[in-house]
Amino acid sequence: MIVMKFGGSSISNADRIKSIAKIIQMSLNRKPFIVTSAMGKTTDNLLQAGENALHGTVNLEEIKTLHYDTLKELGLKKEKEKIEDIFKELANLLWGIYLLKELSPRTKDYLVSFGERLSAKILAAYLSKVKIPAQSFDAWDIGFTSNSDFTNGEVLDESYEKISQSLGKLKSDYSYTPVITGFIAKDKSGNITTLGRGGSDLTASVLGAALDVEEIEVWKDVDGILTTDPRIVKHARPVQAISFEEASELAYFGAKVLHPRSIIPAMLKNIPVRVKNFYDFDHPGTVILKDFKDEKSLLRVITFKRNVTLIDVVSTRMLGQYGFMSKVFQIFNDEKISVDMVATSEISISMTLNDYRENLDTLKKELEKIANIEIKKGKSIITMIGNVKHSSEILEQVFNALKAKGINVQMISQGASKVNISFIVDDREMETCVKDLHKIFFEETT
Ligand code: ASP
Image 1: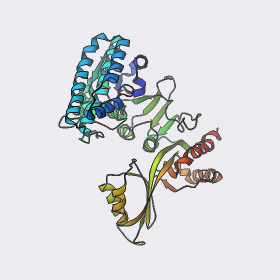
Image 2 (image 1 turned 90 degrees about the vertical axis):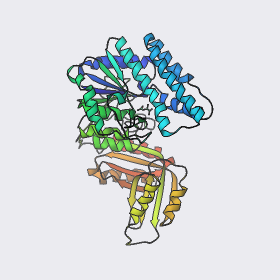
Image 3 (image 1 turned 60 degrees about the vertical axis):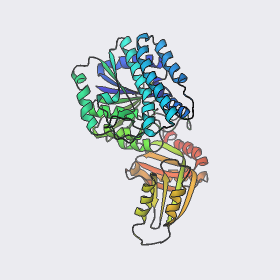
Image 4 (image 1 turned 30 degrees about the horizontal axis):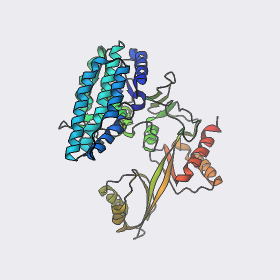
């Protein structure tokens, strides 16, 4: 048994759905359980429709056209009625938003859930049409339960047992292909929730762990995980295999390959996750494995995050004072701002903010009660994922390259997980750094 997850760009129109059916057909002997995202940009379009309703316009035309055109092109006349019912419910919701002038996180989750509910129905119907008997499921009907943290729900442990009970029968008697909505769940009170943007990777991972499958395949539009972003380095190349540890560092540090939290359920059950290319299905892609070690190469991937804010906090009380860090982090906690990178000395802490916020006035005011603060915007984090056993060698090469270009590193940190070295430069220097480092670590060694 395997899980196959198809993201929004893989399921963006009728032709893509036909290709998905071919891919599934080729994997039928491995008993695939399918997880799907919403079609194309539907999640964004639904959020936009919500904003428009809030500001006085209810309009669903673009979303309707995409789904009805797809049905038509796939020759799925019978499905029209079911889809019409879903659109009626969606229109009612939008009128509700319009009338109440309310678009809370809970309402947003209900709103975006329509994307996956529609795509799963269409995909299952098309599979059945081309003689791959299939059935669609809304994730909550097979046990996906989350907490009530709307727009960023956390899957509750009880889901695993429930999922295994609902779909376990298919293990021995695979009589149809289940197509499950990614991204969405319900909380214990029955409210619809979502697992954060890109959350259908997490659905796939939870499903795979609950059913103890042999592999989880995540289908994207690239040949797996690449040595860096191909928009910066055209000849970035696919990495054959990486460890779970490296992959989770990657997910956190900017590479949009997998939803950051998605790796954990698969990792705990030691289930390989393979990232495959929708446009080149023979390509093996990248497999993420437990304990994968490649002693030959120094680095696996160079990744980066732009538009990062760096905060330097220098204690006004100076040396030997205890409790300073805990006070600083308590302020971040109170402000609900999470930090990525941290570097400390006896009297100062430098850190980068995880999410971009324009207004940091309250944070600054609170921190200024105990320290001198400097907030610097427009920075980039460059992260090198790899064999940090050789960190001195890696750092030597990094510093030589940067020195040659006259670029100053503004902060550096080596992750406790021992697979990542990150450093900060100005946004405008980032591209040059990534290009040069890619050359040194991946192009000159081959
Ligand atoms: N459709 C959702 C999104 O666009 C979830 C996903 O694609 O994973 O974020």
